[in-house]
Image (cartoon, rainbow, N blue to C red; front, side, top):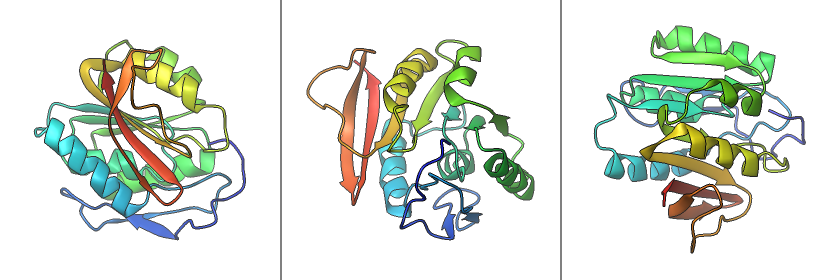
Length: 195
């Protein structure tokens, strides 16, 4: 994550809300720019995903700006076959590794480094679900959506959190379009699919 002001409402921990690790707390470190996805936002997002992808056991997921890992660990808890968590901040990545070990999450892999550089090492169409939650005050969202469009399968889903709504009336230049969208406080969240 890129340095920025710490999110004012960041809790000390969030919880996995479903699946085999339901109610497991995930610590929220005091790190610049860290703004974990609120529980109610994740609950809505995963309800959307469950409606469109009822069987997650064959799903490969990518959490590109992992932070606490709430989105990626939530997907793994619900049975995804593999989840890759990408985090730039070494201290946050170390916390992700401690959580992975605590959960004995063999299907979760942690990659440390710059998200937009790392995505270039992944094969096209290699993930069924990609999570994008970059710092709201950064310029990473547009390039991250472009990268996700290359990485997601033809019928796959891209989940995006942002500080402003994405256009819902037409496909984006990368070929994705918004199929679900909502808002909770300052957080706009969206589900995208190939148009």
